[in-house]
Amino acid sequence: MKVGSTLALVALLSACGGDDGFDLAAELAAASSGETVQVPAGSYQGPLTVPAGVTLAGTAAAEVKIAAAGGAAALTAETAAGAPTEVEGIHLESASGAALLVKGQGAFSGRRIVVDCSQGVGVAAEGTSTLELVDVQLKGGITEATVKDLAYPLAASQAPIIGLVLSKVQSATLERVDISGFGGFGAALAGSKVSWDGGAVSGNVGVGVIAEGGEVSLKGLAVKGTLRGERGLAVLSYGVVVSGGASVTTDGLEISGGRGFGIAQQGSCAVHQGLLVRANDDVGLWLQNAAGSAGAPALAVRGGSKLHDNRGGGLFVLGSGGVELEEVEVSSTTKKTVSAGTLGAVEMADGIQLSGLTGGVTLENLTVSGNARVGILLSGEPPLEKVALSGVVITGPGKYGLIPENDFVPDASWQFTRDAQLEQADKGLSGTLGAAAPKAGLPDLGKLAQDGLLSSGLLDGKGAVGQGGLD
Image (cartoon, rainbow, N blue to C red):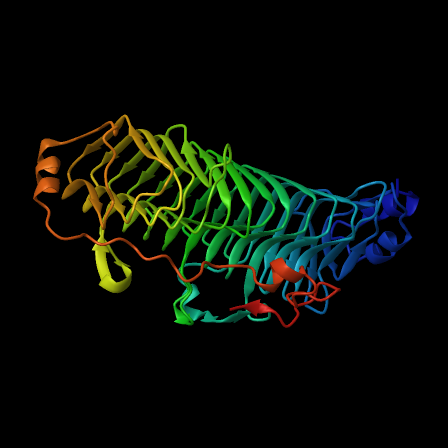
């Protein structure tokens, strides 16, 4: 343990720390794998480096602060085979680059860490074998009042753009990790295996959480109030984006109060249990261009999930197949203008919309209620696989109940009920309502996902801001 007589004496004599002879950089440089550097309360100047296998331990994040003005990460944690590198009880401040950069292919553990980031990235790791973050707060400082001052495309040297970046991390465990106030992505998970239990991702601009490739499990996570960027290039808002072949499972995930979409998914698979998507300014769950396989649906939503009070749509499935909904409530969808391809802009408020299906869909034991335009809209020719409805209850208030259009032929085996008023309106409809058109593209991580963290230009090898940014 790296706690000798000199360090103990400094801890006793120096309440402010860093000002009366305690040289944290020297202590870290002299530490060997398996040793611990205990840091007295106070403020310290970065950049600093924790050698592989060393533990940097502060008394508490409120009492130990490391700040860096730029040129490198405030704190770099090196990892290698053998003992894990650990950081605990530290407050990091970064005005440029990464507040915390984890390097190497070993193991890292961070506990009780607070990050204030005015530019660049909060925490970044690439290629780490195992990574653990527990009781961590990443704060970018952007608010709904200040987002209007951000001009997009946004460079990492202009604002805090990503709270957490995990690139090609073999196994990451996050517990009670909060991320707020970043200008592009709250959390960017690229080609990594991640298990995230608890915490909140709130008030970020653009995307709350993106999983591009890899395997991601989200449990008890709340993604709230994701904002739009409206100056320069318009930046839409998404609570969660799932893409690039990612496999995502969630349990108790909440996405609420966003200025755009709840979840957007393409070319990937997701299974949700106890999902709550509510009060978002666009479609609650948008799935496009995804295909499931036997025993592995493109999308499954189960276990008392609710899509409530979203605008435009509760659930849209476009050009996809392999979808299973069971024990789900889709309710109180309100109106929003949505692009409907050749029909132009159409005002929609649909509970469930299934359009251009490429594979089977199962709707079982659903409550579809109070959706302003239509409860369920089915558009286009049915797929070769079966579209099955059983135990589906459709109620008002709303204009229509269940509408098949554009050559979609209902199956005689469907088991559903709808209010008499909705049934009468359905039978009296002439023409088509119009279905949404797939989006040309969803947000992606670009070079970050393709080339990795450092090769993308977002950060250089020292954790300083590179030439990369957000398009």
